[in-house]
Image (cartoon, rainbow, N blue to C red; front, top):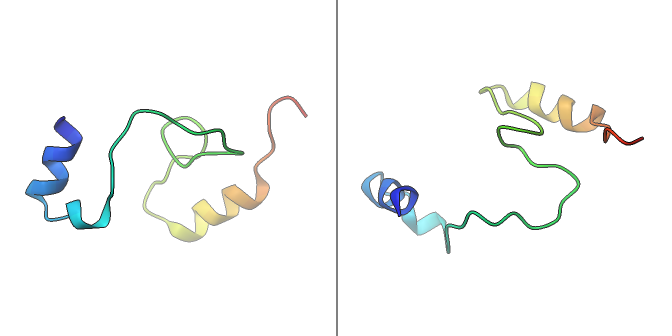
Length: 56
């Protein structure tokens, strides 16, 4: 798996137990669809606080 190899090559594999493409049910994700992390933790936290699901 490409992601696992990248983690090993960058000495980050010790921080992860498993890599998967399965997303468990959740209120929101910080990823490329719900909330995108763009390097600013404060802005991301603000987006999380203000997040509203589309069906409400």
